[in-house]
Amino acid sequence: MKTIGLIGGMSWESSAKYYQLINQEVKKQLGGLHSAKCILYSVDFAETQRYQAAGEWDKAGQLLGDAALSLEKAGADFIIICTNTMHKVIEYVDEKISIPILHIADATANEILKSDIRTIGLLGTTYTMEQDFYKSRIESNGIKVLVPNSEDRQVINKIIFEELCLGEILPSSREKYKKIIKRLVNDGAEGIILGCTEIGLLVKPEDSVVPLFDTTVIHALEAVKSALE
Image 1 (cartoon, rainbow, N blue to C red):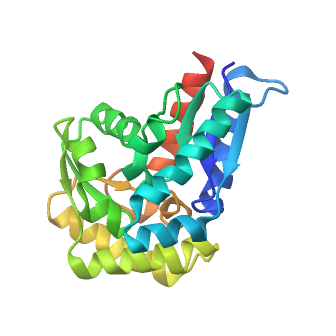
Image 2: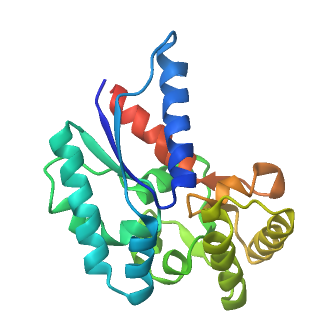
């Protein structure tokens, strides 16, 4: 079994879900008392969020690059960054290490293609929905990406940072997300990417008439697949 290096803490709410999913899948595949060989480097989310808000992505990238290097030195065989947004700085991370990084958007695109879906709605932070670093990675697979309108994007982002990252799961916010998903479906979305690792804590398959692609689950299972190859 290979050792998984996890860069987490963004937020720790979803990082805990990663840890749970990875270990559950290892147990499922290997049975008995088996669990995952993994090392977690959990950053202070307030620091990375401050860099995001200030547009200081180089500093955020250096922070995660240092975390990745620590994981490599500790024995990790490959890295997963347990957040969608911070894949914006993956180049900073990659240049610091000699081990692979499993990109969350690549794993997600592969799952979408398996479902024969070619038009997908994207929910996430405003950075993920509005900037090109994530959407282009999905679109390079021949998948059209739809994003919510400006007002809906602000609602999604506010709920992520002011509720989900703090562990607050509110039914009223779930209803807001369901309405946004319905609007995306009306615009032609055949499925929805939960493109922030916290959204799956709030939105469940029964909340959508089209398939949901929970990036936390997809990324965690891809990590196990790589660890056990």
